[in-house]
Length: 177
Image (cartoon, rainbow, N blue to C red; front, top):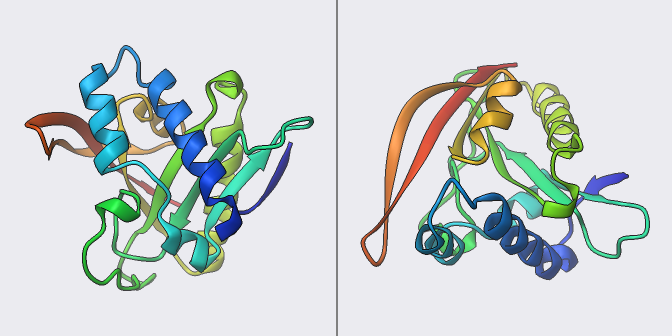
């Protein structure tokens, strides 16, 4: 397995990974309309993470496309791809703000092999080096068990109202690093 920083050239394959991951790994947690609403209005690559050099991907031996991706951010946006953003995404202050864990997705054929943990370890290392001592994230229901296993605690339950009157439960989580 090879972990590296994502580039803009990776965006199409990352969006394909996100769709495959969300559709397969969200089954049993969300209904098909909720999954499709998330893919349309929330999930997708946040190219600011790529521009900042804080979004990572993992390639498996013999695979031409990434099998996992995830990152962290020193910016205010808590979750969502480019299609979910509006306005300025200002920088956080590591002395007072929590860095964000963002957009972790694993291809279903590679789920539960420690790739999420590997991505998280790289994010924690980089965020600590940037001076951050806390993380926040907005977890989907299928992601919440991973983040809980990594030591995150739920601070708030949120119902995201998406277009088409689709309501999606999420969990805001936090951890000291």
